[in-house]
Image 1 (cartoon, rainbow, N blue to C red):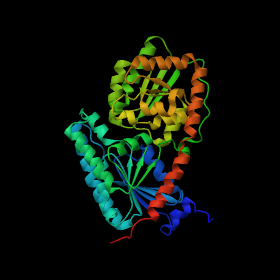
Image 2: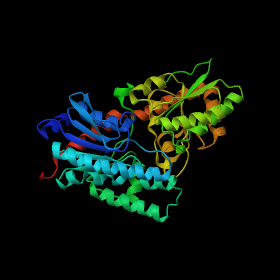
Image 3: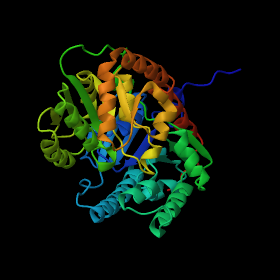
Image 4: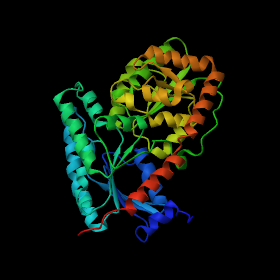
Length: 412
């Protein structure tokens, strides 16, 4: 049997060199670890990746290829629901113009749209009409998030309209990528289907975080250093964690908390609340922390906490921050949510969402029995090894090559 070419060879043979790929994402490339991970995997083997995003123009050499950032909007506006909708509309308009202009110049081999919103697929109409393969990468389920943000029931007309938008947008794509099998199954159950689907899990990039670290024993003396990093929106429950730390310190426990967020304005707001709740022992980084700096921040801590609140949207999440804590060998506490529990069981210590007393009790449990905490961390690390990025990357690159090799004939 003739051996199959490696992914790198297929990429080059598809176009006489690396592929030209466009990614569209309504986010900041510098702090978006998922986008960075995928874009770097492509560029390292020689592909040219154009990211239409919120960043100023920049060309980043990576391996044998490069990543080029193209700004489609100035940033995500703050100010409530109206600003949220206006920001989405402004980015959609800018991204549509950018993708059209870039495709005229580069004639992309493939376009990957990262939701939200799902309707961003329509920014790629020109390459789609040329026969260019189009991927819709479902980072999150938009109907559930919309219902949560706007306090609407699943049966509300606006939520039903968003579900219709989801189906229409998905129908334009040739392939769907999901972050978990649970998200894939949910969308399939409500009629969102594609010729090709694939799960590419959002696991830590070894090129940034290094190899999985052996869990270490917790210190017997001195403060227990707790860390949280990532989104600071209310649904992520960081205020619950701050209150838990305040309760512990009020009881005389030596605990400290460092928070590294992805949004400067949200960090200022949280810092004001934290100053009232826990005047001592809680530090909120004022500026977003670049992905490359996160491993050093985590290495300085003993315990990672993922205090996500419960709603229809968060019940579908497997937070990457949780996987990063496990990758770093840290004992981890997480909210008792279905997907988290299905992947890790009691290999991470579970607390009730939105309950500071439950989170505080879990932290106390880690300090009281460090041997058990380390045993849990060891088991969680072994579970992570089954889904690590190296495995996800190989499947992702093979999918990109398969779609690019089967693209339709180009038209002017």
